[in-house]
Image (cartoon, rainbow, N blue to C red; front, side, top):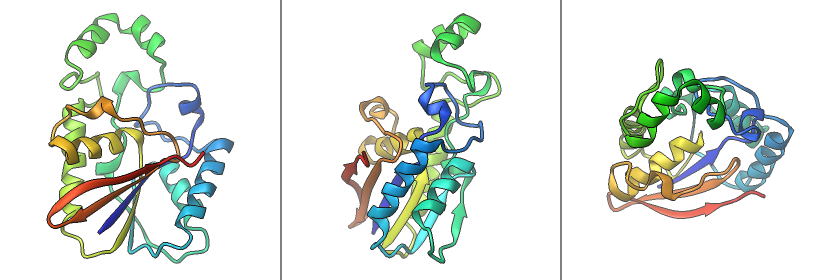
Length: 196
């Protein structure tokens, strides 16, 4: 089985380097171009299933990629980006100024720290892991998952060690395409491609 993970195209929040996951925002003009480039990559690949998060940015990306195809989009909340709670929509500098004590805790125990009204990386990882466990059970040749940078890093972590140890060892740029293969009862990372 081939599972293609596509990070949604750029948004203004990505461009401005703000922390956001729960915020529902649209692609900017660069993000639309990135999605169009990804569409070129997928134009000759027959996709059996397409999963997206509940966010507009993944929906827009998927619609551009699948332009003209009769493909059902399956929304799954488990592949929503991590919820940063009160940190949502703020830059790192703004978060440090507004929540200095919380930032100390965050830096000390980043896996377990949960911002107010948000979720911890451990909570986030558990739902992404649950999604991947269900992917194993599918009977399909090619699957596309349009998701978020944090989700894709969590997937890499799940494949490598089934915990968050490798979470910060990977980058995931807007528009990147990662091919994960599932063979002989195991996942492996086949390739990571930049669309630029």
